Amino acid sequence: MRNIDQVLALCREDGDCLIWQASTNSRGHPKVNHTSGRRWMWTHYKGPIPQGSFVSLTCECVGCLNVDHMVLSTKAEITKKSHARPDRKSTRLNSSHDQRS
Image (tube, rainbow, N blue to C red):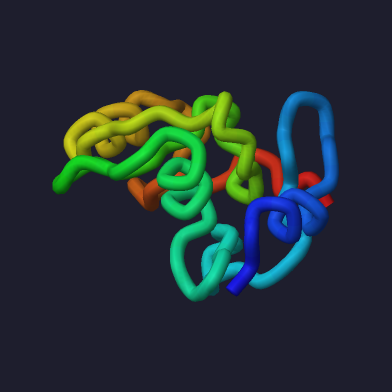
């Protein structure tokens, strides 16, 4: 199990973003200790996530783990935001606009 110091050591700074450099799921979303990296970071810094809530990013960089870029959203809010973006080709949650390699 990784602790917060180990997690932060596996991130690189890119502007205000903290880009995860270790394991991801098939869509490029960070995984920490076999769970969503965003959920892990939110829980570590801000506490429990209410049932039915999702951790969304304000920066929209799929690999970012900066908790200052995270907000709690409902699935309906995420879907509405997704449909409002002209560059979206699908309604996939939190697709990155920039992989920041």
